[in-house]
Length: 390
Image (cartoon, one colour):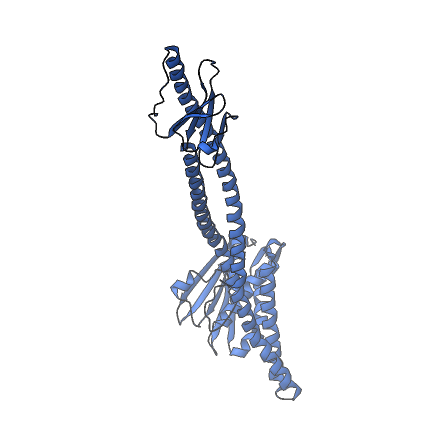
């Protein structure tokens, strides 16, 4: 990853994980508060029931004219103390005697929960029953640990899921960036050759050397630059959405393209042979020309120096045959995809055949390729379904 991608990933994870943890934190806090309320009610009820039991024992003892003898409760978590009407300690099992506030009904300190039960019997010296437990505080601390643990575990899980999502989401973007990087590098390389030839030819022409030959090179380079520009513009600005169908002669357009590429093929000493039959179709002219030009341009690009290219139109099927480097069977499955090139040596953007494929799909034209490595390739396009019957 480069710096911008890393920064984008960190920003995405920060926002995603931060917002997710904020929501989870709020939900956990609400859950914690509800649990604390439930715990407080449970603790109050438990202490109240225990105090009522002690109160009953005290009342029974004095009703039978006996002195109440305090006993330790069966539950170790519950302890109690007894105070008289002057708030003086009579008896105590509790540990937090210093925290007792007899003016309250139920409250908690840092360590204990307290519950105060009053006796209003004048003949009984015991006035206050103080119940104490630390179980509620322990449960509260356990709940805090549980909430923190869930929060940490959730943050790890959300972070992991966020990382996976970001990788999945960034993958097509990354692939697109790599394609565009390669496209820019290839475009610079592809344009470099005709521009260099153009500049050299102009320089030689100024010196008066081989003016006829230099003019051919200038014309060839200019047409190559024009062809490259048209491909880039057609693909980048998505001209596929613009279609103006009209009747025209396909054979005449092929001949015009042959004339155009004759000036380009001369630099590689390639002879363009053609044999076309009369054929009238109804289709968008610009797209038809792009289809024809890209197939012929592709054949020139991947043909060997001093070779032939055969262009024909028979029974409404357009053929372009070269005797160049050919395409392997593995590459034949990928060659029509965007930014895929047949040969790194010869360059190219990998958009020419993609344009051909997309035009054929739009007009339901059958596109076919027969190729053998180091023997050549034959591309064919069947125009039968848009031919105008004579």
